[in-house]
Amino acid sequence: MVKQAKAQRMLTHDQIWAALDRLAARAGLSSSGLAKRAGLDPTTFNKSKRVTSDGRERWPSTESIAKALAAAESSIDIFARLIGDDTGDGRAVPLLGFAQAGVSGAFDESGIPSGKGWSEIALPTAEDNHAFALEISGDALAPAYRDGDVILVSPGAPIRKGDRVVVKTKAGEVTLAALKRRTAKAIELQPLDATQGERAMAAGDVAWIARIVWASQ
Image 1 (cartoon, rainbow, N blue to C red):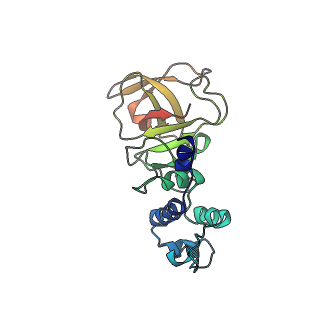
Image 2 (cartoon, rainbow, N blue to C red; image 1 turned 90 degrees about the vertical axis):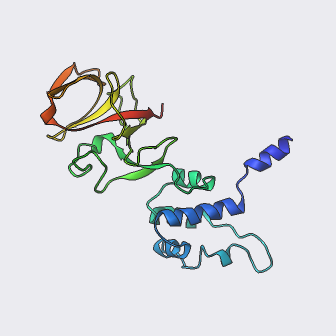
Image 3 (tube, rainbow, N blue to C red; image 1 turned 180 degrees about the vertical axis):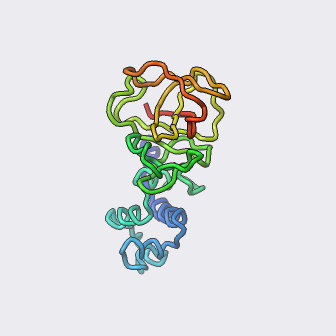
């Protein structure tokens, strides 16, 4: 029974190739199109190349997988999800470093990711199609969040008193805080940075506010 359980957890030839097919589909490409974009021979990922003429299974090299991931602007984390994901979506969301969140052009006026600089990450939940992730750097937000933590932000999630939120002002400042009070004219926040005190700002000064729905702690 133990040997059988171990065998079931091993990667299979079919799983790896299926994941490459899903990776190509995510990028809007055929398998040969993905190979070509990755700088490989266009036939590298063709189904005819997956088994030798004498019936032996042929596996893709780690180099070819790495090049395919780069060409698809994806990550090994996403690929791991695609290996066992029949839907092929990988639960991927855009990822940006928190320090870059205030950069002009990183979001549109509704708080939806836009522009360059975004990568992808696979997370356990991403029901909001506009959800995005921010990676914390440094320990200024400890103990709420520490260096390397990833938070999932949902622009479409309802926001209630006490929720942790991301707030971006029209001046470009981005703040992580707990929502204390919100009216039509103003919002009151308790910043997660312990060096900052309670803060109130006029609703007209807020570009957008979105709820933090998950963290990788």
